[in-house]
Image (tube, rainbow, N blue to C red; front, side, top):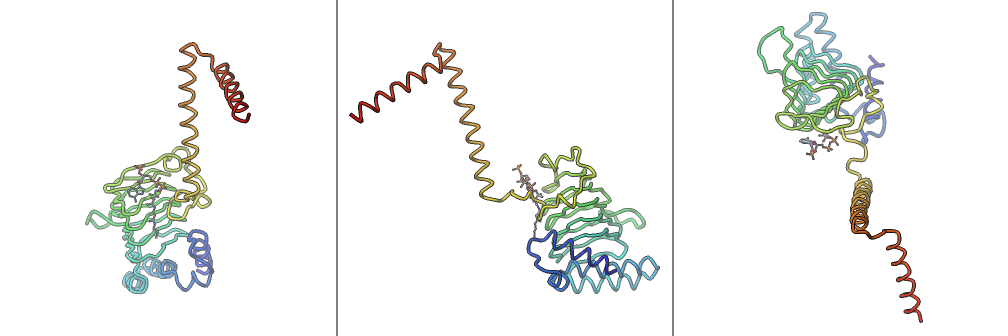
Length: 253
Ligand SMILES: CC(C)(COP(=O)(O)OP(=O)(O)OC[C@H]1O[C@@H](n2cnc3c(N)ncnc32)[C@H](O)[C@@H]1OP(=O)(O)O)[C@@H](O)C(=O)NCCC(=O)NCCS
């Protein structure tokens, strides 16, 4: 129990840039409180004390705004950030190191009992604020679900799904190519975005690089056309340099 709590606190400190100390996380993070209560509720449920499990779950919802069905299976080092409005259904499975933001529903779309009605999240999945993941589908390891997405189809490992209905976007980590089994913990980026995505300095550097590449390409086109017209580029530049030098000395005189 305490080992799980220690892990929960460590994972919050690792993944929330706003978290400052263990004490702050222990006392002020409803996601941590909800997971502690869920462990009690889940244990009661597994012992057949279903009403007790439901009661603990209801207390957890009252105290934290996070509703986790006592039968749901939640992995280790899961981080529910802010938490208010999160609903995790009865047959949902949440893998280790997943991050879930406020307003997320891991919900069902069928009313049949004893069927897998809720989603299964793999390891290290990030589910953005307000996203709805509906049905007994699978979301692969390291996948990212954009805020307010409505996911009704499976999402592959490492893929990024956004929109309503959700569709896959992006490449790289989001492509799912060859990154299965990657150490999702070390790759975690707060809010599911790449570290420098909104850094103005990085954006300015990228814009400058794009501009330099574009200028090179256009210059090369000019050189090609000059050469096609029979003008030797190097000699043209040398002639221009001579002209500039003589013009400069004339002006200085
Ligand atoms: C989905 C997400 C992980 C993608 O991050 P990213 O890899 O940096 O992706 P980008 O910002 O490059 O966006 C890729 C494309 O998806 C679109 N997109 C990104 N997030 C989206 C969203 N939530 N809904 C709809 N489209 C979205 C972008 O407009 C872009 O589209 P384009 O290629 O047509 O321009 C991120 O945008 C996100 O939603 N994270 C959750 C953040 C969150 O919930 N924070 C709450 C903190 S309290």
